[in-house]
Image 1 (cartoon, rainbow, N blue to C red):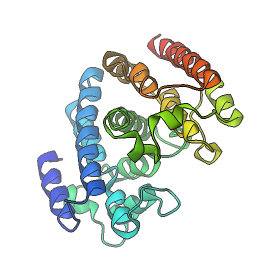
Image 2: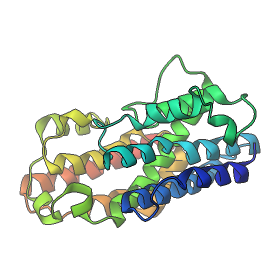
Image 3: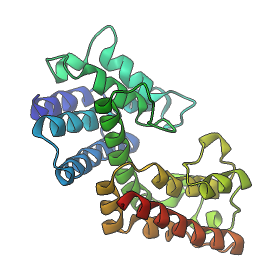
Length: 257
């Protein structure tokens, strides 16, 4: 498995898209970020070279469906296209594009499952093999780490379509808050307010699988930095966000045992 070759093929694939388009550019940067985080997680976990290269290949390809989604719809919204499912069809469908990236079919079932499930509500499925589950959880962890960077670097107006001040004045919907208290990610369809969207970006920490990922989150202070980006002028919301930070930290402590 030659990750340098795969990167060249990926770059050639991107040539059909407008690299000057801001959304395309952001997804390219995101892909690079996920690959970097994947390398670091695998290093900390002491992964064998083959496992690390496989994980890096999955990171490189995990969002390949996003580019066609942007080309067709100029949108990241799930109701325009299931980018994960499209990515699987693109790679493993009739054209078998996956063979451009890696000649052997040894790892196809692992790559397919990891890409298909990387943005699902939960990556766990008892039908998965131990190795498939490993790579499903690895890509979900690495993806979330780079999404933290995105939530900290991108303007709130771009992320949520309104100012940070406007977000902080809003309530957290009861259904969303119940999921936070239950230490689960937020079901996307339950989000009603812009504040619900911001809370969901914190609640996805409840889906982190590995201690090594938690270590990176703590070192980068991602929880407090993401939470702290919004000025919570709504007193009830401010109290809940303070409580949510504590809930996340308690969850992380359980991952470190």
